[in-house]
Amino acid sequence: MASETPAPATGRRKGPKPPIPLSVLTGFLGSGKTTLLNRLLKDPAMANTAVIINEFGEIGLDHLFVEQAGDGIVELSSGCLCCTIRGDLVTTLENLLRRLDNGRMERLDRVVIETTGLADPAPILHTVMLHPYLVMRYRLESVITLVDAVNGLSTLEEHEEARKQSAVADRLVFTKTDLLTTEADRSAFEQLKQKLDALNPAARRLDVQAGEAVAERLFNAGLYNPDTKIPDVAAWLNAEAYEGAGHDHGHHHHGEAHTHGHEHGHDVNRHSESIRAFTLSTDRPVPASALEMFLDLLRSAHGPKLLRVKGIVQLAEDPDRPVVIHGVQHVFHPPATLEAWPDDDRRTRMVFITKDLPEGFVRKMFEAFSGALLPDTPDHKAMTDNPLAISGFTGPVR
Ligand SMILES: Nc1nc2c(ncn2[C@@H]2O[C@H](COP(=O)(O)OP(=O)(O)OP(=O)(O)O)[C@@H](O)[C@H]2O)c(=O)[nH]1
Image 1: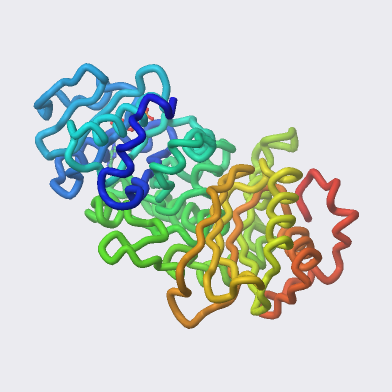
Image 2 (image 1 turned 90 degrees about the horizontal axis):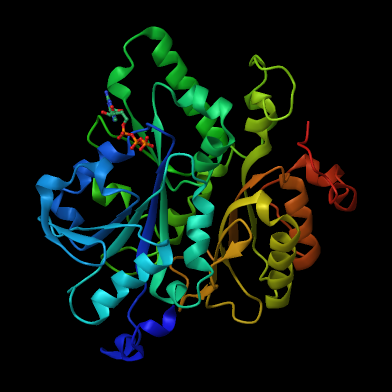
């Protein structure tokens, strides 16, 4: 627990240490996580990174070992640390902090957690976000999801977990594009990319085979530019990418065949459409209490349907210092206040990836609390839907 770590650690230099960026590497079974990690671990750019994996055995690190420490952490010749999850993730993350705080480790610039193939990344993120001490020392930077270019389309169609993994990603990394040899393969890959456009329009995409999956492009997806430490809100939100993607979901998938009949959980189109990506924005400053009530209601009543929420908000009470919000399902990072707006755009902007939670409903709720008009993102549903009628809604909008 937090008490094991000596308190003076954070005060060794002046002020508390900045939180350590933490990324989650996920992707379906066999999507190529181990292969990519093996390559990354040799990259000098991974120095001062700790990678947390379930099993050393799988990853075949033997030739890279330099030191085997008692706490399940090994130091690799690249300067990267590798840890197994012994006990639980909290203990592993605490062990890393202990090494850092007692000087056994000089620096820790980044932590990467590899999930098992079937895992929903949200509980891993919650482990950190809900822990009172870890949430001060680590900061969620990015979710990186590997997508197999050959099998990705069928995996997405058949597995809810794969859709969620893709929807919450900050980076979508294609593997196995070298295996796209036939016309049919390439056409399936195009369809896969279209599906991902709908599920997650904002994630930057990288191709392993094109050499794009290097550390500097995979990571550094957080709010803060790692070099300047200045928040780069526009890149982090990438709200422009949602324009066009979030508003016509109903039209993206028509014409696709249903292949699995209509038992629950197997209607491909219905599920693809149930995950939505959209933005809300307003010029009007939002009262702090309205923001709080809006987020409280969203997360308490609809938490599991919020796959990912990011935003920057102009508060009525403190319009010069924007507040940054960041949530994964019902769990939100403590809101951070920036000292100033990073650029001239002072609008409140929020991006949402939701499941079974229609855009019109979220929009209406935001309007109801904030009194804000949302002129730049007209949505005819918002004009016609009655939010009270929808609040008990459980299925997708047709
Ligand atoms: N041709 C090709 N094969 C790849 C690529 N990436 C991974 N593979 C192969 O795909 C298989 C699965 O890769 P892994 O790295 O074990 O995948 P994983 O995601 O770690 O798998 P799990 O641990 O089972 O979830 C291995 O045989 C890899 O060699 C790629 O870009 N191209």
